[in-house]
Length: 301
Image (tube, rainbow, N blue to C red; front, side, top):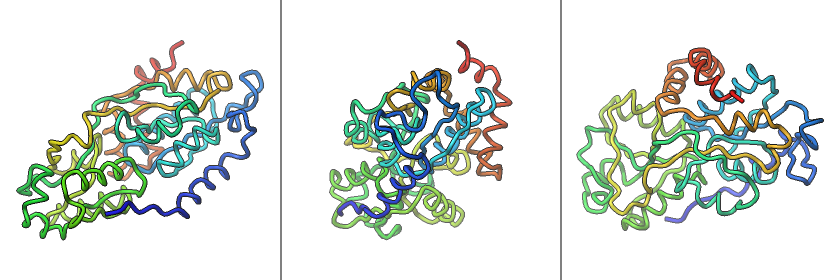
């Protein structure tokens, strides 16, 4: 199965980044001015519409606005434009870099063009996820157990095309000999979780691309399929990545972003609030208000 890439969608996302960010002055300064002395307190956060990144980016936005007095522009894009936006300075920062495996190609493509501040969350995982009631435990079984394949119509429900998780799942199809029969369905993070919830309520079989932390594991009894070939890699980290020059142009924001760090339980609390009906803004505000000690540590000089 060949990876499908919608060129027009990718270009549209890049244009959206540039339109939201204004013209770049060529020094990787985005729209943040020539230095800290005359820079406006504005910052542009790029993120992908994954539940985990919606939670983290809105918490960062809440702290920047209410604690540091910044005006924050939120730029929702796909993974590729998110990385290139940081690299070319049309966005200032992201807290959504899954490393060392999921986004390794994006990091390699933009080496030297951005700054990796290190992990803001540890203990993440990604792979193929199924309801616990399904009688399958390993990716290897997908090549031999026709009952599983027939039950899901040889389809794995994925997320946005171009996402690192989707690229790794293409590798899974190749390395486990699944390409001839199995299809990786491109959709979105929201559509994937909706399909999973619908199947789960009916106790129907389904295989999805999944990751931790995610609220779905708190709401449903799910399991990862074992990956004996290690295609998805080991446990990952989510990193904070900023454009070159941000430290000089926006030192307060940079210092906070450099210290931003929280746990999977912290992130899950925000995600669950959102899935239960709170807006991302309200969920982030509630978490920040309830976790003053942690926020103060991020802002300590």
